[in-house]
Image (cartoon, rainbow, N blue to C red):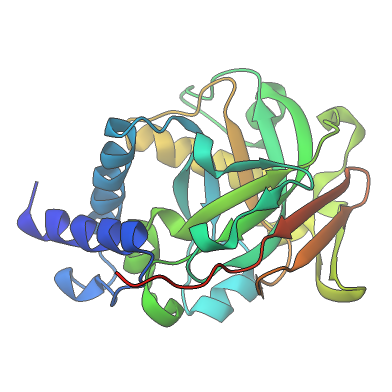
Length: 267
């Protein structure tokens, strides 16, 4: 492992532990060095596992064109979800555990079988899916001001923060995922909207991309994992005390609640 991977991982880990955003790490790598970004992400995953955190799934990021435009990137990425990131519908998320949170509504798939075959497309993902849930992903960046390139966000575990899952699983067979309509509101105002087609045309295609990529990287998707298939609409900044409700037609609703910010303490 190169020194630059260790250095980048250390910078991002320190930012998370201290709750202080850091400068971009992209200058440690060649422009667009996706492989380098994933090497840093794997190192950070090792750090978390060594400290007792348990991987429970994956997230796909940057699938929606509107989000790519927001962040100035042009391809999807993925990260690992850990047990401490997962929240139930309506459960309070402590604001102080986050740095620069934003929310986006998504479709979550719960896998009932491994996805490790030689040929994986939408049909194979559908067969492997046990159930589907509405979700709100809390994306967060350790990079100050969200000044990120594709290398920065990949290294930073695809800008993962937290996940809120709906409480009522729905069978995939009853859904037309590309046609699912999403509306997210806060304080009675619509703050984001979109459809399942925002996820690379079809959330099943999005997850198929992830499954193939994960195999190439030696970490196939496994039964029991939660997979976030990508944003259905634009990301929305989160203020302390905010509440967001996302309604996904045919899937139901999911609510993300955030606590108030605690007073800063001297370090």
